[in-house]
Length: 287
Image: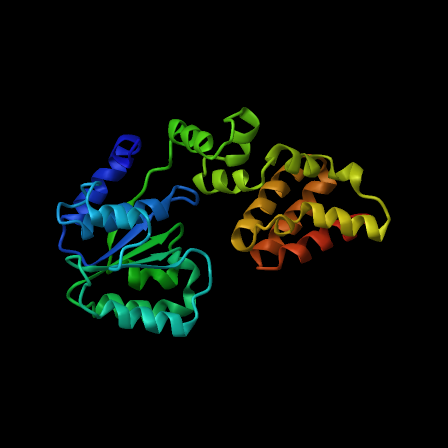
């Protein structure tokens, strides 16, 4: 099913935005609401001669992330200043084949050091370039950019959309997995990458009984709990660990405190390995 079927109000807002004379757009919604997909939908509307028909070459290339006149940055990853400068240079060039060029900046709120450069780009936009920003929160520093954008609010995905996403990812939409997903499409993809998410997260439920005063065992336990050991890195690994800590917090009062402290470490951008090491070795020492 299409976005028009699943979230008709969001789709209508995109249509209104694409028909406007705006050159910059800010797509706002909760984490896990599928903002990258919504941004691509808007990009297709802006690039397609028919406003996003869904069947032409432009629409197909946007869906495949292979459009020469579309560029994406962000998504939770730091953007080196050299890469940002290249993007700004690219945005000033004439379109290769579409009627305009489109730049998508995902999770713009995480690119605080780039705000001044991005602000200049929306204040002085090239005539044939559109900017699409996505954000889950609007910090005060982002307001100058936000005030120059056409705002688009994205509704949260409904139960049918989440269930379809889980089935498409090879996950059975059981009550236990739905509780882990928490209405977030990004978590669906991450849980699928775990292979057996039920087995993985059961370790957090059993963690209070698994910890014992043996450094070698604690290191092995940390390895088993580390999503990066299974090839999931970056923000994906951090989000999976957050899911596990949510489960751990429900096991006992003292472990709820430890889980909260570990989650705070993730918020401070401590590495997943360090957060797990502190969680397990402090627990072993009674901390």
